Length: 116
Length: 113
Image 1 (cartoon, rainbow over the protein chains, first blue to last red):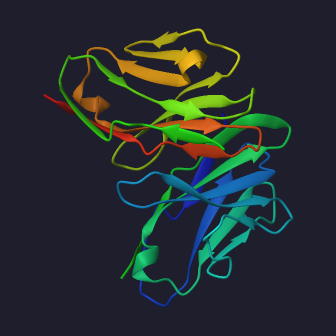
Image 2 (image 1 turned 180 degrees about the horizontal axis):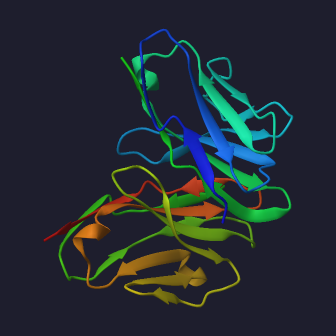
Image 3 (image 1 turned 60 degrees about the horizontal axis):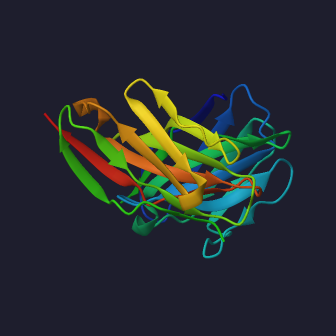
């Protein structure tokens, strides 16, 4: 499997500020990266899909101007939560896949965001 | 449409009991993969198993076993002789042609010592 890291693992920020979460694929060519959000005691919900070098595709109900995704390389994707509010507090998980390796997807360890 | 149903929201068992976690899925695809993940309190998803739609053979790994039945669209997970360390949330998930995961709502398992 692939080794996927996320940074930071935990972050606390004040309401109105922006926070960036990094997702790195350490040994895997991540042509596609996915971002999920998980609220407490709920399931993972896909937020967006990004292909390297292209704009991300957002799921219905996810504000693209609020959750900025950049997938500039095969090893790095970033999710920026802009003007964060307490309701954005959640667990954010990324996953990576390779177009040549269908049906394989590997998850990062997650980032817990708390907005005060 | 793809859908994964985990009807059991919470289960509590006493240590050493066996427990089965149910998973029922829906998909029109003939090619798909089914997964089980464990999510301990730390939050990191721990991969347990992946099965493709063409392989209905049941699998056993230590105290874990999985029963895949296409006829009933089920992929159930059994833990034998449960231990306290098994306490976690368990997710069943479907990965289909679009390379998207559909997760069930999860089953929270508590093993009481």
